[in-house]
Image 1 (cartoon, protein in one colour):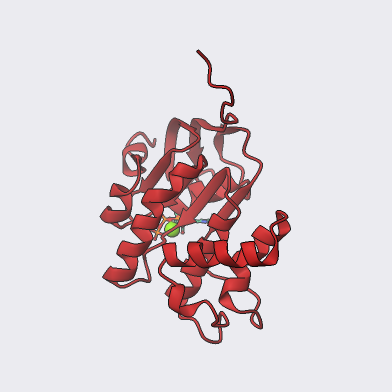
Image 2 (cartoon, protein in one colour):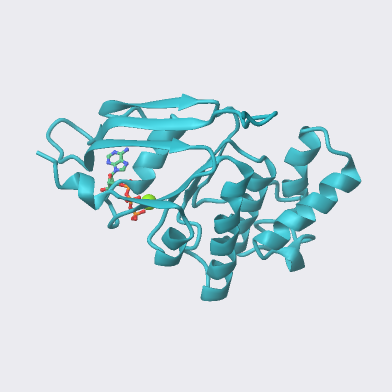
Length: 215
Ligand SMILES: Nc1ncnc2c1ncn2[C@@H]1O[C@H](COP(=O)(O)OP(=O)(O)OP(=O)(O)O)[C@@H](O)[C@H]1O
Ligand SMILES: [Mg+2]
């Protein structure tokens, strides 16, 4: 029997993706084909310079791949958390997380309560009244950007090196947050060097394997 209400279909598909910067440059990766469905978390791993951030830029639509295609279905809300956090300097940290909830129609008290819960998930409960950039560290500001992205409940979430600037305990908090976010039904792609982040995902794509076929 079919369930009374089925989840909307969310899918992302790479078909023969390849990237190099210039006709004579070596391929960063080539022949990358993969399909992702809603709820899946995938870690993109590989050595520094292997093209992890470049692949996220292609998926975000900021860069056309040298060859191959990226197809999407049902990915209306796309969020990305990259390494340079940006926010409204005069606003408290929690406002950044509450704003997307207010924009989606939540009442102020409901949005504030949900934002506080999301801040707790990324280990920022003690900092919700701080103002970003003047009073948050780089790692705290990046976690705030992750919290803001989670508040949007994105269909596709792209995250670049979420634990690179963090101490072990904060990294563990972020990794357990990552382990819980697939439950919301979105697709999550995370570029990372952190084996614990990769372990928090459902699958791993190692770009080193796609550099090997470069000509
Ligand atoms: N716009 C560009 N023009 C030319 N080369 C570029 C461009 N963007 C990235 N590159 C090069 O492509 C390679 C891959 O870069 P990318 O940032 O994707 O690597 P990465 O796997 O994310 O590395 P890291 O682990 O250090 O973050 C690098 O050698 C980089 O210098
Ligand atoms: Mg990178």
